Length: 328
Image (cartoon, rainbow, N blue to C red; front, side, top):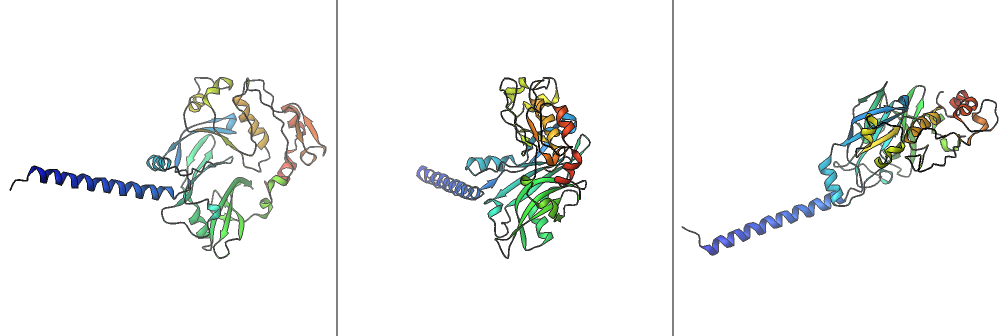
C-alpha cells in the first residue's frame, strides 16, 4: 500500500520534531550537568620540556588530555581553577580538579563524577619521570576514613624528602581542620610540627626589584610563586637564542616556566634569581638593595647587598637550614 504525499510529509515532520526534542533534551541535560562543576581545570601532561639555569628551573609544555570535556566546560562558562602547579627541587605537581565547589567548603565526600588528583613528575638529574597519578580523596581516606582533603599548599623539604602541604577536614566535625604533609616518595600522609609553623612569620631575605620594561621580559617577580607563563612577544628581551629549544617552547601556547624550589629551601633565593635573570637582558642586577636579616647573616648583623657576590658572602646557609627547618 502506497503512502500518500500527505502521510510522507507528516511522518517526516514527526521524525524531525522527535530529533529536535531529543537534541534539545540532550543539550539541556549537558548544560545542567557541566554547569554544576564550579572548580575545573581538567587534566594535562608534560609532553616536552627543557631544563634551565643548571637545573634550577624548567620550561615545560603542558598538553591537555581531556580536550573534549575542557571544550564543553568552557562552552557553558564553568569556573576554571588556575592555581595548578607546585614545584619542588625533585617533584612537579599539577592539581587536577573536577569539583562542584572549592574543596575547602566540602563537608562530605564528593560524587562519583568528581575528582581531585595530582599529576606527578619526579626529577632525576635533568630528566623528568612521570609517576602514578595521586587521588587525594583516596590518599586521605586510606589515612583515616573520617577525613577528606580541603586545601593543597606548597612543597617543603625535610631530611632529603619532599612533602606537599595538605589540609584535611573532619567529616564528623566539619569545622575541624589540621595540617598534614603528603610524602611525595611514599605517598603517605605525615605530621611534622616543625614545619607546620607558618613560614611567612620566619625571617626572610627582602628583594627590592624594580624592573625596566626595556630590558626585562617580565613585569613582576614573585618569590612565593614558583611558576609563571611568559608572553612570547617579549622573547627578544631574554637571554635565549632563537635556535634554542627553550625559545621554541616559549613560543608555544600552554608552556609554563617553573622554578624548582621547595618553599623552605635554603638556596631558594639564588635558585629563583638564576631563573628570572634568563628572562632579562644580560647585565640586569637583581641583587641591588637586597636586605639579609640578622638571623640569616654570617655575623648576626643586618646587611644590604648590591651584588650577588656580596649576597653570597653574607648569607649564611647553615643558619638558614635551622630557620627554615629543612633538616631536623
